[in-house]
Image 1 (cartoon, rainbow over the protein chains, first blue to last red):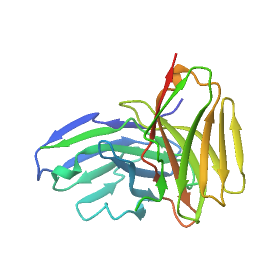
Image 2 (image 1 turned 90 degrees about the vertical axis):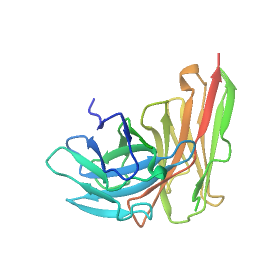
Image 3 (image 1 turned 45 degrees about the vertical axis):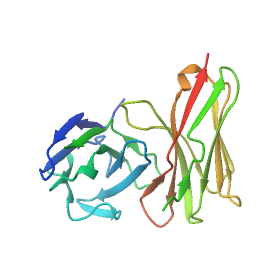
Length: 114
Length: 112
């Protein structure tokens, strides 16, 4: 069964460093999403992406964040200058068509900022 | 801004009995609701969904009920099995956008 994959599974970085989290959505899916979950808290929407541009973003997704689909398979989340409070589990998700469909989630990347 | 609330952080149920997980929402523009199940170190896995035009959706042991007037939905699992032990997230989507709003989750433990 097709699945969303994410790499790396864990990332430890120093505050102020840039990180890139990678996702490979399901191949025939067109909408892509990033969520994060701070330990013990709810899953929070960051951004949705369609047709090579951001379609919606939350207030969390500030100028430190960017997303890109550099090729036909990868979908990346970049955090330009990490802060301690960026430590969280980051989930990528994809849907075949527009929301209203089930989002399929990847296993997540656990980011720890020291 | 907690638009989707799961007020019970945890629930324990005996194997074979019914598990009832509850979710409340505040946004009347929400038109699609989902339940996800999450095991540790894994991403959320879709379980069951319901559109706002329905009040019940059933899939095997899982049934979701939607009460729009109360802005409340619930997930019933019957009979509960030990493998159902996981964190369950309720999520909702507004008819104005693509964003899904998640609750904080309820950790279900099914006791053998």
